[in-house]
Amino acid sequence: MIRGFCGTLLRSADLFFRSAVRLYGQGKAADLKNRSALHRRNSNEFRVAFLRRFKWATAVCAVLLVTVAASAQDSAQTPSPQNLEKINRFWQETLAISAQVPLETEVEKVKDYLPYEKYRVTYRSADGVRIRAYLARPIEAEKAGARLPAIVTVPGYGGWQQGIMLDECMRGYIVLQIYPRSQGESADLWKIDGPDKLTWQLDRPESYYYRGAYLDIVRGIDYLASRPDVDSTRIGAMGTSQGGGLVLGLAALDPRVKAVTAHLPFMCNFRLTATIEGSLVRKLLLQYGDMNENSFSTLDYFDPYVLANQIKVPTLVSAGGKDQTCPAPGIRSVFDRLGGIKALAYYPELPHTSCGDFYKMSWEWMDRNLKP
Image (cartoon, rainbow, N blue to C red; front, side, top):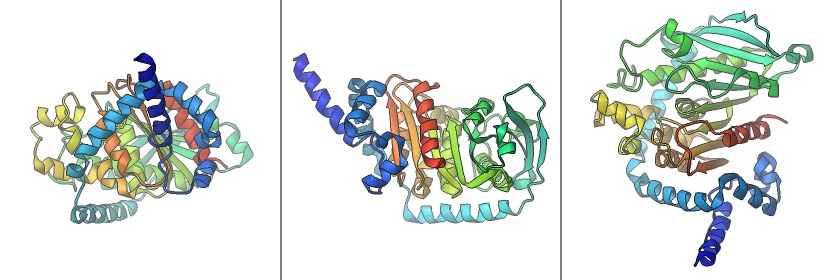
């Protein structure tokens, strides 16, 4: 019985390898080999590496279950063409207005004993709000005079903990850690007048919190693009939890983003996630009395699930089988709607926490998509 069961798992693992974990890009296989480190190995080597990395016996069963669960509810969550057109028009007009605001950037070098250069950056975003960020670059960058690829990253829901550290600039990148309005150090410059970001002014998209937060990140990319040491054609976005959800949405809004990695992303399919016990979305909407259709109509404007049809760049996403904060079905539903090259790493035993394996994969992903 055990031998037959293992044989079934092996056959399932082979099918999973050929379908669920391949890069779901619409290009030809030859193109994928050129663009992804994972496909630079031959199929046998990759199968071995994959089985070792994701503990395939558990992953196969768990991912297939997640796929079925997410697919069953997908049609009910898909926005209508009319709503998509309305949302796209909103963002076109909003981004155009935001772009007219002068950046008025202030850059201060941080004096510290570090193996890289660190700068404190303050710039103006939409609605005149000042935003705080930190930039790091390799010490040798100035001497070499080269234009480097850049990574933009934003914190988790707590507002402080960044998913990407500044010292990662020593990989050959310029790293910009942005604290959107009312988060981290930016809260010293402007703060919401309510207890919670997700439900702040949720009655209309024009004044909703995440409208400003998205624009704060776009303005950060404006700043990066203005720097002579940044190659604006090679900008990536990386984030965890809230940061992961924001960089997914960012990729839909800003074509300058060329690659994305999102670890256990928050904000994925608000309507679906709000039905899952233990999710942060459900908890906050119930706590502040916002579990209603008017709230979801606003959240649709900022949901990576709704915006996913605009995401065409290489995107790597993770989900955890024991993550109650950002449940896997919501993440999978977003992943299924992504266009272009994409990959999903599912960890059956992972709660809402960091993952060294995915962190390593994320930098491999950026290297293959942002470096020559």
